[in-house]
Image (tube, rainbow, N blue to C red; front, top):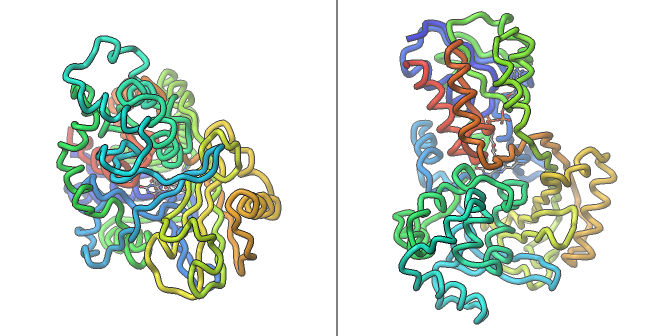
Amino acid sequence: MQKEVAVIGGGISGMVAAYEAKKLGVKNVRLYEKTNRLGGALKTTTLGGVQVEEGADAFLARVPEGIELCKELEIEEHELFSPTTAKVLLLGSEGFYELIQPQVLGVPLDPNSEMSEEIRNELLIDLEREEIQADNRKPNEKTVGGFVRSRIGNLIYERQVAPLLSAISASNPDLLDLDVTTPIFSNLKNSPSLIKGLQNTAVTANTKKSAPVFYAPKKGMSEIVEGLSKKLYEELNSVELETSIQSLSEIPADAHILAIPAFSVAKLLANSNIDSETSKDMLLEIEFASVGMVQLVYKAQNSKDILPERFKGASGALVLAEKNLNITAVSFSSQKWGKASDSEVLRVSVGKHNADAIVEKSDEEILKIVLGELAKEFQIEATPKASRITRWRKSFPQYFPGHTQKLEVIKDALKKQNIFLAGSSLNGVGIPACIRSGREAALALLS
Ligand SMILES: Cc1cc2nc3c(=O)[nH]c(=O)nc-3n(C[C@H](O)[C@H](O)[C@H](O)COP(=O)(O)OP(=O)(O)OC[C@H]3O[C@@H](n4cnc5c(N)ncnc54)[C@H](O)[C@@H]3O)c2cc1C
């Protein structure tokens, strides 16, 4: 067991890594964060008198790590919110349509739900498949698009699955690695029917009983950060904010956990004269997308005052790539969370992989573009009483095929020098995956 461990990066991954290292018995744990706050992409603030999430607004309920961490921080289940509506709209070149429910990552589970005959036929083909045909094992099945298209056809993929995954990953899921991006699909590689496989997982059993798909603490995602911070300030040897680590030699320790993006790890390794040219080059190959989060607070007695009728009861709308808009998604926060308030909050996302130049525009320009697209495409014409734009530069790692294998090589090489990795660059961008990466980095200290 290492006696002294330095953790770099005070996002959820680094905080969990530091906390777990201490729990495992490491005597001296120190955490370093370059900004003036812990939490990274978890950031709850107030705008126009209402609580807003500038980064992540919820975590997936069907993977255990998020809820487990909340329990550990004594945030009980009754203190968690879940979206009160499953209705989601999609905007394609032919206008708005509703996401078919129930679904898992866009794959409809019930052919009796309301849907076109064309889509129902595609579902039935999958449901009746008794064995995996040889051509279902094509090399392109390494990507989410390749796999899902081959199982349930292009139509469902393009109208349901791709828009959802594109919003989650800020990317084109035709390019993304199946195993890292969608483990729930990847686990069903050997199931002749993807839909039956999804129906049979315990997870999906929950979805059927309309168990929550997402959770968020009622006081916002920062409640998780505050709970963890309290423990860290009590138990760690030091938590240093506003400390940007440029070289590992600045913070000597028996072991280092780097819970920062892959490109920052590469820079740190280069500055630290760590003998790992291959790791550095491989880390730099991982691409990232930047996104902007535009919060708009409207004065409204109820959401009908600003939202056209078609959005009634919907949690939000996702924009298909074919529309070529800057807006990629809009959440209707009050409807989504069923919050009674005299304000309606719209959370508008802009920017995705290979289309993130908008993030570098000025606040005025971004606001003008967003309000213009909301008026023209969504018929939302009201003027917000307050707005805030948060830029998350290079925040969405792109997991292209081969990502896991690449990471294994890098992790093995660094482990020999007592350097361990955590964070969203590893095995998934979602909060549960980041928590897992932090725990695994701490456990790796034992080996
Ligand atoms: C806008 C947005 C919306 C999202 N929505 C959701 C959602 O709803 N649900 C979900 O599950 N996930 C969501 N995610 C993804 C999820 O929030 C992130 O993947 C996760 O929070 C990343 O955590 P992390 O600790 O790995 O990285 P980060 O949060 O990026 O933290 C890394 C930290 O390291 C610090 N740092 C970097 N370099 C150095 C250095 N040299 N020295 C010291 N400190 C350094 C940074 O300042 C930062 O605080 C969203 C992400 C964004 C950006």
